[in-house]
Length: 295
Ligand SMILES: [Zn+2]
Image (cartoon, rainbow, N blue to C red; front, side, top):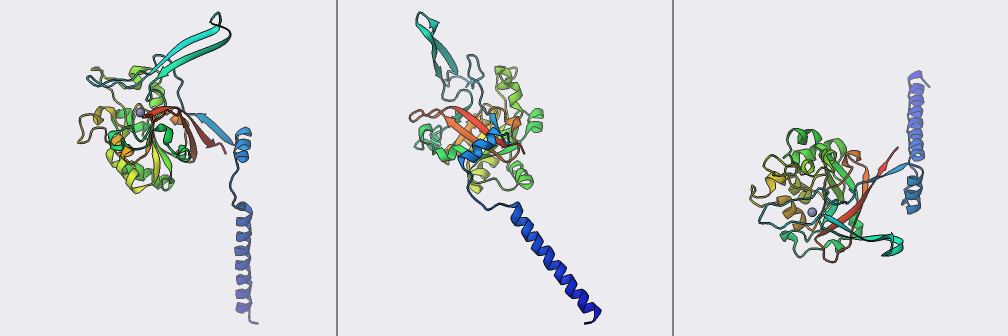
């Protein structure tokens, strides 16, 4: 055999070996697909591989809450009444009862919250499988710090996708605006100006419409008091509060006043959302955890 032919055989052999090795390495790196069990999740939480972040605020009297202008009616936020505290009313026990708004503190807006979804599910009938959801976190902290009325645009969503891939099916799309730093000061959290009018960033119409029509999401979440930019949403748009109108009309839910949004990665967190099960409620206070990989 002439030298060039030998060289060709040697090169082919080398190439095949590299391909075979590559295949072997790939098989070694990717274990056979199987469903992770609840026990796998538990051990990952216990050994610190999965961090659990508390995304709910504590309820207390005087906590920040939405305030609508007259003549609209407003919600109670939270009131705690003591029944007994190791005293003559109950010598060995401490207990309270409380009253709370469906839309006070960290809470879920149910699909029947808005007139566009009046026949849709109340908070007790949201499918529990939709309440465990991947979080796609859109950061507008910079934009909101210079413009407290900032609205997330369709372009912001597309920019997120360019960096992180397509919004996952069943995702909660979270606005992170830096508003968490303002908690628990009511005036700061509501962004009250010198006239007492509220300000805060939110989702704009174009982003909400795109996410509801072009992607398959479970809902929206914000670290502010409303998914709408408060100063713009009321009387200044053709449809007042268009985000609520669109989201609930599409049978989706929302989360408002999500805590610790600044601790969530842009992608990869999983939210576990547990609203109180109020019969046909328009929403409810919710304990929300985020599971985040720490590796
Ligand atoms: Zn609400």
